[in-house]
Image (cartoon, rainbow, N blue to C red; front, top):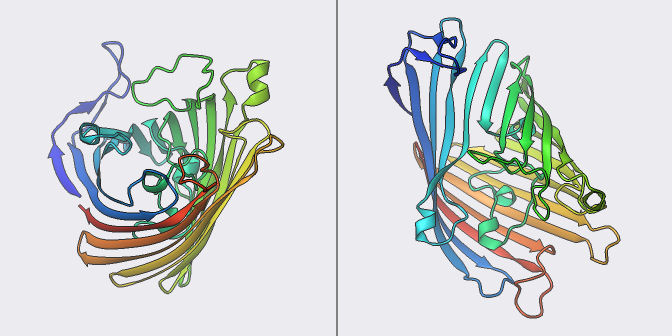
Length: 370
């Protein structure tokens, strides 16, 4: 991380009237800038029709943070992660930089509050199956092979919310958040009460999460998970009968010893994002070993979707991955993954004669962290 010191005399926490109270500080803000750049070369062999078998891409993430501490002990500031556009097509869209995570915060001995586009506590405390480097089966490789989901429904979503985290007590920490509108972030004004036909059918989301990190002799333990639930925007009888309820919960654990780490993750999406009566669950298992600059890992992920009695067969998507990583120099690493996957959830856009997508994905990455 590169640090830049900027002088300042005050931060207005609550702006409004001219006489608004200010919390002053004699110390300057400390601004930190860091991030990572990931250069990938990808080879795919699957059943997708009219799709290239190789791809090269560049993904960069810049972490910007400004923090100060007031005389009364209050710590406050701004945190953001800038990224190039992952989903846009064409060079012009790929050159657009946006911030997926951006929030203001304040904290002290009583805990921490975050306000803005940030993770819910359950996702922030999640413990996935262990992986190395790119991530093996835990890697979000959708842009390369299809938009398959091997995670809980609200994983990695930065909708605008307010979050409170407790202090850490003997390795334990908990949090709670409130999200007014699912799928709304940044300057978006989500005032529409009914969103017929939209995938963002939920509002007033409450998330609860907790985590534990501890060590017993040479054995390390990590636990984490939580739940998020919300209401349907449209409460008409028609929507109530067709749109699934929103409740997501998940739990994960890892145990480490002598360079080995073993763990897993289980989630239950219920009807979230699905039709009434459907159900979706998923799980992962993984094992890694690290020594010196080397790391190797294997993991497995699986998602089962039950479409109830609607004339559609149930889907099972799975993937198993092997990976390795080598730190060539401080801040520079070489990483590689090979993943075998099978996705029954993809039924269109396939080569003739195929009813599902299965294949193999190879990714080689050069990564710089600074």
